[in-house]
Image (cartoon, rainbow, N blue to C red; front, side, top):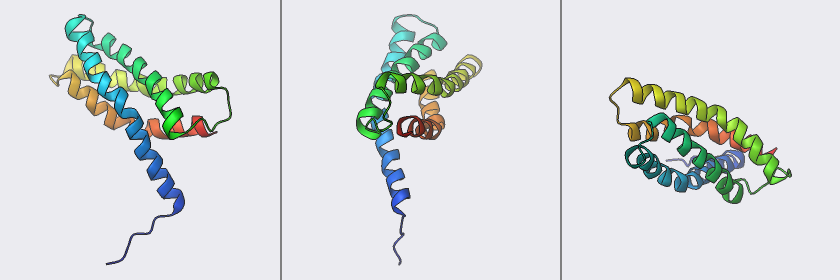
Length: 136
């Protein structure tokens, strides 16, 4: 059986994608209990709690992506890159939040399952956007 030969460019992209997932894992693992605490303990509405959780994730993800995945290769000041990242990711997070809100308000799907599903749905788009912002 022959070996599958990957181009260096594709292999590098795959490695970056894996690192992207690993860098996002810490904020994801905190986001689930954070969302639960805000809903179940603080009594916030699910949409408001999720909005707060998403902002937390965006900030933590930026820091971890900058350190471990893209290594600040854009050459811009960090704060400028952060705000470009924040505004662009806000588009994906708004779609994420909208889908979450519709599903938790109009279905019987458990809100934390919706949160996990949205991570899967939006990951690739966020990866390619993050790569563009942090490497250009």
